[in-house]
Image 1 (tube, rainbow, N blue to C red):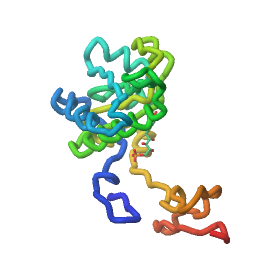
Image 2: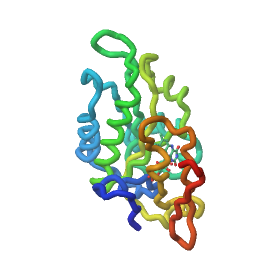
Image 3: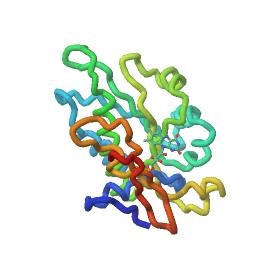
Image 4: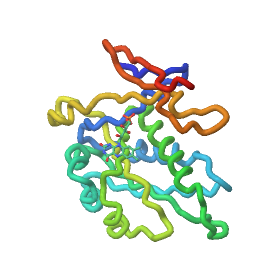
Length: 213
Ligand SMILES: Cc1cc2nc3c(=O)[nH]c(=O)nc-3n(C[C@H](O)[C@H](O)[C@H](O)COP(=O)(O)O)c2cc1C
């Protein structure tokens, strides 16, 4: 089922989602590096490019090092991945070593490019924060000047039926808040829940709950 948008936009945005069903097959190095190539073109302040990606391939000796960082819930499905990628960002500018306040913002942009490219290439790219950040820093020897952002699970699409029953129930495409709840004209709106969203007979209802709104 196609996810509905409020405004007309490219389908690449609602079509990207985070499935958990993966086939267990490997993707090629070309496919993997096409994702890093997409990330490469993200913009950043002073073109500093603070993102770094550290990856492991399923079946290699490094895989266990990455996989063992995951919480049990994520291990249940990520075991069928092709690759795990740790996304980190350099906290200071390379030019002058001064703090870069937007290192996470820029690395988020690079990650989203990677995720959109993966989706357009028909791959599963599922980002996770359910892993041990401290252990990741120690085991993967991440220096203090780098922030650990997230991990991305990459794989080939699999069958929903091969997931456990509980995971099958979760294998649905989620919806989003309405634009009115996060876009404010002219100033910050302290009551973003001005609109209440709910479903009635499979139709999404948007109700104003703030009489001043
Ligand atoms: C930073 C981040 C951390 C996440 N952590 C997990 C996780 O640990 N386990 C998981 O199954 N999904 C995780 N997700 C996936 C989100 O639940 C998912 O992106 C969100 O529900 C929106 O759904 P969609 O990506 O299918 O559009 C994470 C996503 C992001 C961006």
